[in-house]
Image: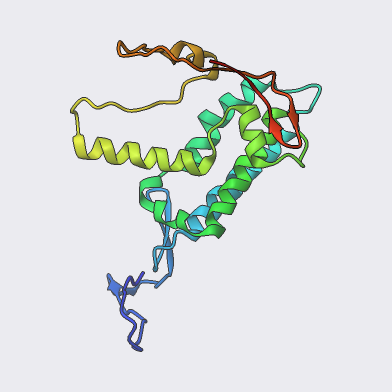
Length: 211
């Protein structure tokens, strides 16, 4: 496979021989599970992964109906342990391909399919709604998270580092527990008090004042 950034109009046919046998020149090859093309767009790799995951999801759809079949928790386990690793394999290599909208749409489509089956929701539900119902991170954000985690570990190595992980909503702190009211010592007594019942007329909201 010829990889070049040159834009010259020259012959792109290579004549490479191994043991007196001419090697076939290709524009796409698979190396360590990642499909690469001669321009490193990785569109073939993304198409291959999404097609393979779509077949798995269609198989799960037959066993996960609205009133019977695989339960919600089991579907999430299958997604996290089987489908998600396929989608995220080698993400640090091809993450730049996610800048293109046509690649992002393919991954969002696959994530929407598994979300609808897991939530047992109608197909008319938006992608944002089904993500909230299932509690699964949108696939684009999950891909960026995996890449950033890889880069952080690559730079720091074995050094201790603080990394944020997703916390189940049941373990979220209550907003009321995080609000603290601090009173200052330089407070002054007010000489004007205003009262209102919240009623509103054409002229606005009225109030009563006591001095």
